[in-house]
Image (cartoon, rainbow, N blue to C red; front, side):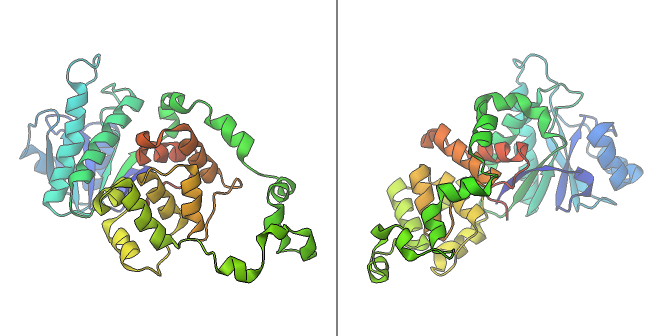
Length: 333
């Protein structure tokens, strides 16, 4: 049940429902609202909305999608931002939660949101995103069904102020991202020994014989996963929900000891299990993967793990960092 931040046109994404940032009278407006009306067919959608209007701020109603790509359109009225002291946060939180409840009532499996109230209603974009992610996380955490939620934004730069939480990340990436093959070889000489036409005597002799190595195999991925779940005293439900992965995928992982998930999924599970860097590297190795300094995404993830206390891990915060740097987010399926 991943939450995915995406740059896209909300009227052109294939989902069960799109959410319209509406006004309380459910009248066709400008911006995202106007684009959704135009995609659905303005007259047909307005007639449907007229039967449901007016609504209160924070409430949500649902109509057919008509000519749009979505089966349904959920309409919710976001708050106008004043100074943050007039229940704006609570009302905005309700917009997302109530919209998702409508989707759940119809057993919808995919919903796309715009960033509600961040346009002419004046809600600061970084604060609006924080409220949105919290509300969506709270809903999905309590929901037993299957649902993928997309948060559609046009420009990651609109949330640059959130970057102050991770002010050193750019320099960290610059310092740790390997772009020179010579540097890579210098850091990984022993690994490359067996791959090149080099005498075995020049490699590290501390590795011992092949029989010694085979007698001391590390735990495989499945064994290590269950070990970490026990150590962290987490339920299976908490693990897959905090990892931003689908319940069906997690069921496949734990029920088939021979199944090896993707590196993306293992990293998502590492964040959910609140593993430190050493534990994360061990976890990845158990499935044949490693953190690579030739991957910008890996460097960002390493940065997050080493700069956040495990108790403060939040996969949505990490995914926002990955989104800002145009990298694939964790937990996507």
